[in-house]
Length: 264
Image 1 (cartoon, rainbow, N blue to C red):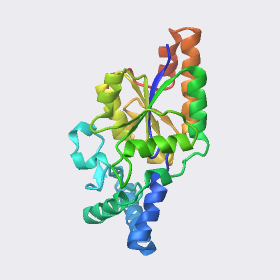
Image 2: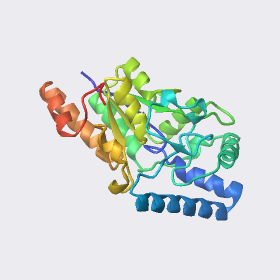
Image 3: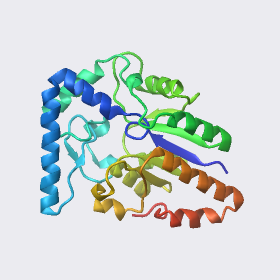
């Protein structure tokens, strides 16, 4: 049976952060980004000194930190992405996202985080008959819809006829309704949604230093990878096991450290 897989976009495939930082400098000046980065560094140092975990980055223009909890419990304003390494005030972040939303073609301007990954994903999906969907909470910008902009971006980077769902709420509920096997995301709280609200396995793409991985994440039973390239290698191994002998799949997944579906 073909694997059914969902991929998040920003932070997994698309480098939204670099472009948002650039837009921050356009809007506030380069000095602003230096101030924000220094503020974030002090937050991390203070958390290290206190022996606690630094706050997770925000998930939208109306918040500056986010706890690991199902997205369905968060405010609607948390549905748009935000800067990862900066701590902006609510007013600054709202102003930034109003600016971003005024840019016609913003989502098509992003670069790939790992160049060539989208094309490789397309080739693997075609070769192995995987069923893929791309999930995003991108806010609308000027011009065409976020869905159309995202489809154009994926096509431009080598993925023909992509299925894109611009969603609200819990990724886990989407995963359950679509009968997904895996969801690949870069945010721990989204991965928690998946393992709480569905039978899918969640794979967290964590490019930061492993020591910065929240302790709570290690207890969630997530598959953690350093890159999408590593993720695709694991998915290929799982697919190979399912083709060789279906009973091998669960044992392989357990060896990779995934928690059983539907549990926390």
